[in-house]
Length: 596
Image (cartoon, rainbow, N blue to C red; front, side, top):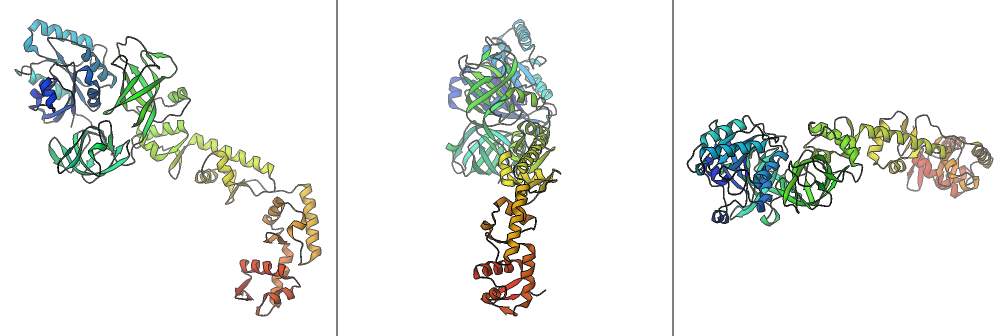
């Protein structure tokens, strides 16, 4: 359902016009009726001659209530700009038009109200003034329709203009519901009710939802749109949601309702920025600002990028006092506290920027607004190099980087994959030069050095022909551990000592071999480790295995010891090794040679 939002100066007849168009009074609060001005957002609806049902958001025009006006304007499809013929263009007319221009609300219809209080010449002059004020804005071609809400004069023409402006409205439905809350209240017997304009995805009774950024989850008990109960509500509709599992005091304006885990909140974002057309003084970092996004408002710090002041278009870093659920392309308005006026608006470029290199980020993310969600995710990943897939999806309305390596919950950009892969090869080669006797570099050490997890390291190894996966270690494919001259000499001496000793070999520590050399000899099969301090030559082990055939069918440790003329300190570890290798089978205190 298209949403029409009113805009215009206080007491120019917005609420009266909405009532004339819909037959419904949008002023909800007694205080509004008593004071004769709209304090909060009002809602009404009707059916146009084309058969299109349309909702109206009536926003307050008084300067004090500009925050409430901004809470409603972001959800509108068509703006109904109201200017009283007897007063003409006023300060809030300009401010509201600035907001529409900054938010790029391109479908605008102007209602020149209260023509019953003026003569024809005055009304004509007022229309000319409005046209002059709209020149150069997004609404410069908007139709200007003279109306009188009380008598009904011009209402039919205004309805026709709205019908034409709405046309065939394409509602975005990406299956990721998003509803900024503009009201929260309770009804006896029903519980918590929240309202807003549903965007980007449907809601269904029974759905689990999350309230961002609070992280509270709730269940949809029931749904209404325009006083009709529905099982499912599609995006683009004013929606009332009855929630179970959450108290009214835990929700309020500025929160966003969505599917659990589909959105991410941030308190810093890189943005494109455009100032209002009639700015007295340029924007500067030292000003105090309020960010208006969705239905919320947050105190914000502004840091301009590449300049000290701004009057026109540029980029900035915005930091807010509490996290906001934002995505690429989200539109916002910036209001300066000191000026008490809207000064700029823009769009979110990077919802979670790094702490530096913002100028490079701006360059890297060019064209992201017009890209598809998948392309946006690809651009963000290319700049960030690595990120979680669910974060990229949250920042791009469900986008998935297609040209990347995906490992578990993470994604790595192609350029980053290439850099990490080459760094892995370089690190392994450096390690091998320093440790020529090792089979390879421990994976845990390499992953720590590269700043990645083991899953990603394994993926990099599998995709790189120069690397060989050795289980707990990784080596270059062309690497073979080698002994240097001093290691060769140590090994020659140790081999001679082992051969001379027979089966009662010296302990490893007595062979004067360093640990690296012992491990290398074992990997090459030149030395067989029986226990941490006992090693044999391969031919000695062959002698022992062959000698088992000369033992009784079942034998004891003592029989084994005596047969090979060994002491118990050799016999026990040898038998345990033979058990482990499957040459013998233990049965209590006896052993037998395994057949076959």
